[in-house]
Image (cartoon, rainbow, N blue to C red; front, top):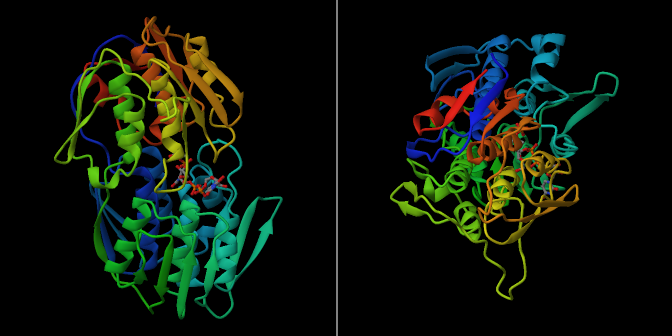
Length: 436
Ligand SMILES: CC(=O)N[C@H]1[C@@H](OP(=O)(O)OP(=O)(O)OC[C@H]2O[C@@H](n3ccc(=O)[nH]c3=O)[C@H](O)[C@@H]2O)O[C@H](CO)[C@@H](O)[C@@H]1O
Ligand SMILES: C=C(OP(=O)(O)O)C(=O)O
């Protein structure tokens, strides 16, 4: 696969785009197939690197995989090869993505042991696994951490036992992992300060369809009555809310008229509102989002006239995965905004590249940047840049599509991790983008 995009900016885009199935939901849901020996059918799977890697990993571990089409796949984990899960090949492959960490919960629940090699994913600061491991420990697992090899080995002596736990933080993958372990534990588990974002709700609903007994879905207090076994089911992934936010930002920045079809508008939480705070107009039409072409957009202030801050927060707050997009869109707004990335400490460094392109940004510290919008007084300039992480990568792509002249974005494997056929889909809207 080639590793750069060449973009000629300035085109106004027009048309309809359908969001892919959600990446971060897919990683949870596909891990959950390990909980049953019965067949599980999953629809609306995004055809992206991270998800394909996880499917490959399950296949290597003996799960029967039948990819009926690009977006539909059947799984049957009736003969899991636990030996493979200790092998150097597993360590290497699972280290390429973050989501692989979530097969530990199902393995621990069903087979009494699991291994968590150092997970991959974006290099956006420290990404600890304490919530996962301490949760498993509370359920009765013992763990050994191998510092040389950087992996956790977990096992249970007499099976997992339900308990009460208050999570240190509402970790998304941590909550998913603990829930998947607790559904087969003996007795009742109560998880307080649980993450409750739509993808986790989807996971809980799927598990309940498989026979689990999870209450409180959608809240931060989950009650799980353990059951002896789970059966097969069918599940359809939600549209990817981070892709949807990225397309809203893209439309505004490139002055394009775009309709995002089947956007799952009931599951977007505060996302549309945050883009509206940047002055972006949009209309919810049924399950679609229509964004008109806008010559300009003006950032709101707080009610007392002070400068707006947009920051991340666990759901139902604003997702950290869209802050890079909000930041880039603000560079061409009228007005100023403070972007405060509270969760990750290395996610804002990509502003260097935007500054090189002519954006006015002050990086105050690793967590905060002030953007002084150019208000389209002048366009950004195309440059050569490298994509540091998945969302910064797409933000740079949006900047390049709005810029004057040619940009080259290197290291686009980062973008391909999470955005399905992005170049092809953007070309259909009129973008001048090619893989080189
Ligand atoms: C595969 C997957 O699903 N990845 C997502 C998942 O990662 P992941 O599940 O790894 O992220 P966590 O929810 O565990 O937390 C992410 C980071 O934020 C910090 N933290 C978390 C909660 C909190 O209240 N305060 C706080 O500071 C954590 O210490 C950690 O460093 O959730 C993140 C947070 O939405 C998203 O960015 C990732 O895209
Ligand atoms: C940070 C992200 O992904 P991951 O957790 O897979 O690195 C993301 O999707 O923005």
